Amino acid sequence: MEFKLYFALSFAMFMEYAIWGAWMPVLAARLLGPLKMTGKQTGWIYATFPIACIFMPLVSGQLADKYVNTELILAIAHLLGAVFMYLAVRQTKFKNLLVVMFLYSLCYCATLPLVNSLMFHHLGKVYETEDAVNAASANIFIWAPIGWALIAWSLTGWRWKFKTGEKGSDCLYLAAVLSAIMGVGCFLLPDTPPAGAGTTPIFDAMQMFGQGNFLIFVIVSMVFFGLMQFYFLGTAPFMQDRGIPAKNVPASMGIAQAVQAIATAVLMARLMDSIGIKWTLVVGGSCWFVLYIAYILQQPRWIIIACQPLHGLAYVLFVIVGQIFANGLASDEIRGSVQSLLFAATTGVGLFAGTQFAGVVMDKFRKEGKFQWRSIFYVPCAIALVGVLVFVFFLKA
Image (cartoon, one colour):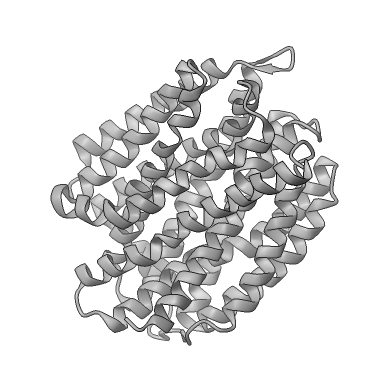
């Protein structure tokens, strides 16, 4: 692969996840803290993201497969996202912030599957075999956790120097700036025209639900994506309640992405080769199960930070391996739509249901303004165990 192509694909992957990582892990602390929102309201703010993911990836995937160059969709969506994220900084009322975050999510969620499909499209033109494409994709995917981790650590450094952690609006400013950079950079990505074959790529992609393994994979993935909301909504306030300063939270959570980068580079492909996709997915799901066990234990305090790598490992071995699995089942004509379908089901329906569920559970176990974290984390822990067992006994891959 030429360095120019590698740099372009790596830039897109890095920026896509740096934007996401700038706000999602730490915004809950601002909502539940300075803005005094309830767990249910926080859940709805976070729900704007998965609601948009239910249909925007399908729309953008259809456009990319049939009508518009992928890089142009990415550029326009991210530039609009920068505007909405800047407006979100100024919103302190629940209803106003809900509307602005939904508009932002419409833009950003349209781009998520397209970064993957653009990468797989160009790697498929360079390499002849699926194994070669998968190996090369690991060298691109590695920039997703690097982007997320570097932004988390940069935000922590900013908070140390300028003391902005208590208000928490700095994460939204950062996401707006990164979105603008990404939008401009997307105009320089390699030309990726629509394949143009067929009339309804998304309906062709939906036929994959007739394949048993794919159906089981998508259903269990939806469950695990829902459980991730306990991590995203709960971890930042959980850490602060356990005595970890707000300024240290982004860097502490960023450990997960550092481990994710290492695992993507040195573990993912080797594990798939040695134990196969099914057991790689089982290992990934089990990491989330163990993570929530550690959250239940809570003591000693360092265990909360020490277990953050488990989220990074889970993301690599479950989410990224799952994207590779889905890509291997898709033809080039429906590649964008298959990735979009997967994002709609998991990052859309799964995250939305998880957001609402997590918000309700957090409110239920909140007494006198304090969260009962042990009781809260028992819930995702038990469900994660069931999901892992379903893969063990029913997935055939």
